[in-house]
Image 1 (tube, rainbow, N blue to C red):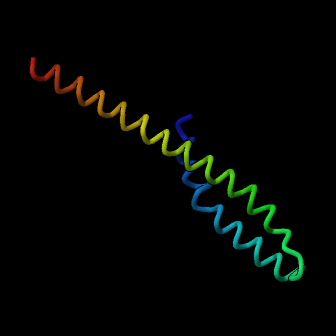
Image 2 (tube, rainbow, N blue to C red):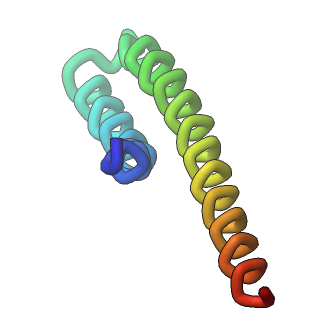
Length: 78
């Protein structure tokens, strides 16, 4: 659970390179047929889902940090 956001960032960075490598393989092996489009569709959907999950994680972590700062400052003023 702790490493989830790290894995999401890793996938968001590596997925475009995976697709680029697949495009190169597609051009070298069968230039007339673009089978890579189906892999790009699947990886693209996974990329968008990971992006939304990472945004959710950032919002939750930011909310917890803001709540902690609020509690800390409230206790400090008393």
